[in-house]
Length: 489
Image (cartoon, rainbow, N blue to C red; front, side, top):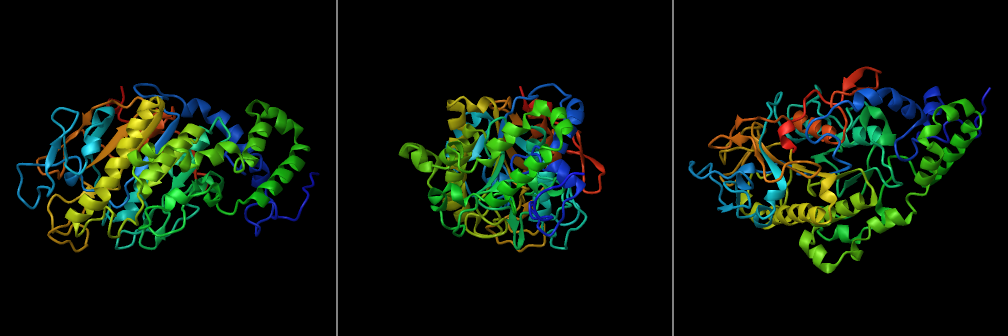
């Protein structure tokens, strides 16, 4: 009979639980980087299915930076302006030429207009919502590929649950664990949020908390544009309830089990779990992790290039994390989805807010990220995606979601909007799809959010139809969609 030192449950993340058979199987690596003894065995069984694929863009990505523009940016006022349309549809901003002939942006994106020959613009993102289409439900769909039945009349969801579908980043690091001792999945500089619903769609859900992202949410409110410049590695929050002392206890628990599990150890020897786990335990105090968070080591010119604001600093930090080996970084737009100021939720005050606040932040941060990665040769294997949960209504001052809108505001619009994809084999200078005359609907080649997620999985060499088992041990596809071959060369 095996005997495990310590009190029941004290060596686990949840001290109210005892040691179960599942704990024994999971303890090998769940402390840090997401590879477990049970997971290692399952990975072997899943390998043939998950890695079967091919076609343009297959297995080109080693990293992804998702710039998630929560709030829903207006495609008509950024990168899909219309000219010969009624005044209440036309953007208040002038159209400008870009590096791609025939493709116009608005005047608030001059820097992105000079680098759009390095990325693909999807001008036909589209879906038809079930019921009202407010932020949380749409965010959950974009992050997980699934919708949920539990939507309130306002379109909001219940808080995050262990039964949720996993964020795409959790799926990626489960099936493609990092190859260096570095944080596998980081989310910054704030959580996904609408009103008091915080973090929905941003967790590993039924995969378990071992695959949750590490979160870097520095103190200070969303109007503090300098807070990312003051971060320390100590600000990084480990996955919920996994602190250094508990990691040490997990190590002791694992060692006591491994001594009595020579057969299992032999079975998984090719995965070198001992080395992997030991490196993971020292991760937080490692020079690699600490150096990645040192924004002050960047030249002042580079800091200015990205923009000395929360989004710009977050994009720069994302590049540094990827350089150090992080697999997935999600840069969440630094404002509550449904709020004012630099939020993209422009039910009112669109002209001033987009021109003076959100527009310049996006223009500087995203353009610098894409061009900087390209100049360093990192865009070859780093996928960059910029997308929101929906666009904005073609007509200003009308209600499409039950919200009040001023003459200088647009409501939510999931039927047609724009996304950006760069790197890892994505086509350069491509305008994929086309919106109609008013930006109301795709004229051709509509792309559902699930198809974009499928394309992300595909770029990592993961079959989007690979099965994952939920909390009831029921098989579910990563996403019920096919990838879009034309996005890749």
